[in-house]
Length: 201
Length: 201
Length: 201
Image (cartoon, rainbow over all chains, first blue to last red; front, side, top):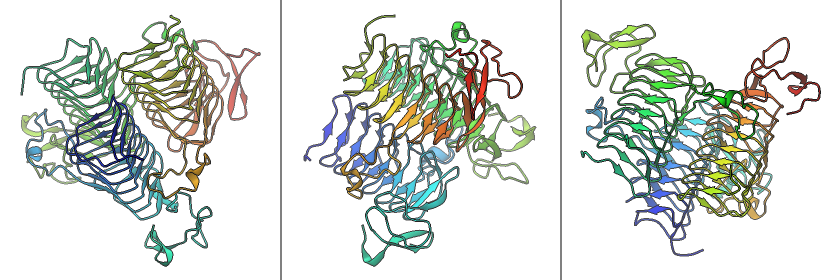
């Protein structure tokens, strides 16, 4: 661990707001005023736009573009080629077809990914989504709206197919909600879960 | 606006056929003989192949590769990681399994995206597709064949789920086809729409 | 053909194990100890990780990341933005939520793509998959588990929708399994095919 930001010689970092220990790999581009926490890993060919906000310990795998309006809380894992959006009905501004809508920031719709959540490889996150704490979006899923805490969602559009532990492993579909690997226990909370006995991760 | 082509210091532009005011961003690559119009925006990590043809005012978001055989007319918006194809049954040529088919250009199948259309984030466009004027392909959709003018298509495979205004906003599913935002009026034309009263965008 | 490895001036090749005649294009990155055979083509913005193993005559199109644990046999075609995975339930290691699982290589799950197979554009391959010889994964498909030799699979999740010749073209769904283009003949073998008369490609 280091207090320096590592920037690969063939990466571009234009932000003064990148935390210590964060590494930015080859052909990645962090724009001016993008906020990136400490101990993050920004993979090759990733792109962090001005106005994106990324917490501590976040993993951005290869080819992920994080736009203005996207918030990734601490410990999020964004899998390779997970795709974000921030405009529900985009048009070319250069085309001049939507000058009214693009006159201000009405077009911009935020996305929030809560602490510890995982976005699977090649998933697509429609703007307006709120992905709950430690939720897991399966590879290739198409996510809109709210994903409950600790929920595992998959498909197009994504549906809840189970629940996962903070460690990422699936919890048994019935009976005691206890992780077979790390022993953490959960209880139901709406369509999601919460940790038992005040043991918050 | 400028009459110059802007090429980011870490982009590669090898084409002499890029129009004035077009900007080519970091780690993007425009190949020799690729045709790109004026006032386009070619995002980070985009790739424009020799033989691609791109009109004026086209937005190519991050990570989009535009192949030989793909035509994007004026004002098209290609969302992040929209994926084109130009070979329906690709094999490795280096493998030598399809030397007959690759002896000429039989394998090459074109794609056309008409004026003002939008391709959503992470969508996939099968070669042979013709995307109509101002049509909108939803994020994550898988498009084959023809998409009518002003149609909104979504899903795998993509189906028509509504219609949109030239400005991008959805039109009411029933009753008067009038955009609530910009007031433009439409009438049905097959499975697509056209503008009323000769008001062509 | 040359015995040299071609590395584009804006590519990065850190591996000493790249075979003769292989070309590595702009903004691609081949890491240390990645094994790449002869006569491969590594497209722009591709990424080959340490621990990936790639045979001879393999085509890696733009934006494909080949991770540790992924094996691509001779003559594979990986279409643009085909996405691999190697961890079924990923979490941020920097988040510290799964220190037990990431203490060793338990998390790593391999993927094998057999000789001559094709992965379509923007498909997603879940780790643990074994893609059979000359199988074809359609564009946008989501593949898990085993894909039989010469099978054509499509959809989410991918299902067998037909069979293809070694040259890539579809075989007739009924009657004689003979390629209309190159004349090769096949017979059924489980859910897949094999070449007739000991004519192995």
